Length: 156
Image (cartoon, rainbow, N blue to C red; front, side):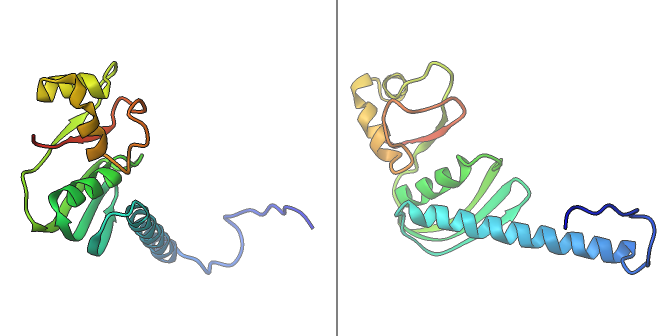
């Protein structure tokens, strides 16, 4: 066998435009459901504890629901999702059991290092490890950050 070519405009008129539109909508819904499941598994694979985690995808926007024990867990879940290519916004609907001060989110610029960011936010470049630890498990190495990446800078 092999590849056979046909004239798509000829033949039985079984699939009309309404059927095509319905099939397209069904395929898009299935694709979004797959993206939602994939994003949910990515958050869960980080070891973050978000109870009743639910994720909805609408184009480039991800809405995340659930309950976290700490503000840190909540912010890390938002960062995991937001630092995925193709995600333009994260609508955070996660509640926190034990509230604490919110961290600042910082977008890495060209030429940045964790020590430079620590100097800017804390006045002490040696506090870069606080930023590194606040962004684990997303960061594996304090020297491996990139422009456009969003980091959380915890309150001191």
